[in-house]
Length: 243
Image (cartoon, rainbow, N blue to C red):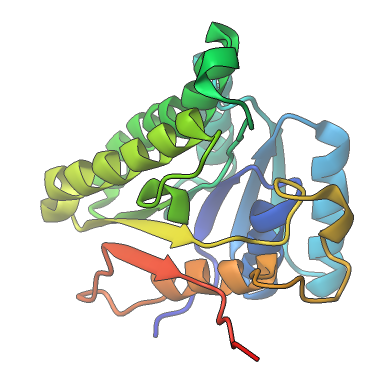
């Protein structure tokens, strides 16, 4: 396994849940962490927690809405200005709206697809010229078990996560000759704010769910594989032991 020490990693949706756990883990391992989310206040809390785990950690806060192209351009420009390179991108920001299709509004649809699918496209497009010039880099897209298994009342979410898998697989073929790896991670049900506000970071394992830190460990595994090893897709599931 290679080290992420001094690697520059951008993590979207880093103010809570999987994104926050990933930022904490990469910061603890010595990466230079660029954390992005819409809330400056929440990002500052994440940065403080990273510093508590590793007082020498380098953390850059960049508030950004992944659906806005101007924010994405500013995020990448700011990260590049600060650290002069970008080694790893974790496209984690996501949203899910629970409604039957007949009740789904066009703004609901647009917000879901813009966040979960257009966002990863926008930021990947922005970092790719940098990684191509470096002759190396890694993009890790966080899809979902719902990217292969449909869920009632989550048609837009499923469509976006199905789409993210296809985007990842196609992009991987485009850039592999530049020594750029593109991987997609499909976590199962995870105990985060996304699913239930009351169960995030309570220290207890919810029934049939992963913890955010376990998903973060899987992301770290993808990022630390040997240079010639490439996991294009990883499925991560909670181990359910029947009584």
